Image (cartoon, rainbow, N blue to C red; front, side):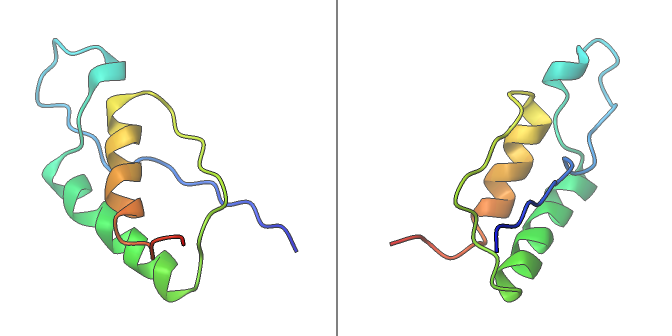
Length: 74
């Protein structure tokens, strides 16, 4: 059966009020949490066939950290 997983970006930083929202990075909390989500998904046996990721910095960084914890596809 096909499954759809929607994943929101990890906690973003608001330390620089001059940044536009698109360029907002992850906070220290977000950098710590994203790999934990990846490990949990891996422990559940979840391996995506396709990932659609927003081009926003916080979304790309979240996916990079999450996907690094998933098993490599062969």
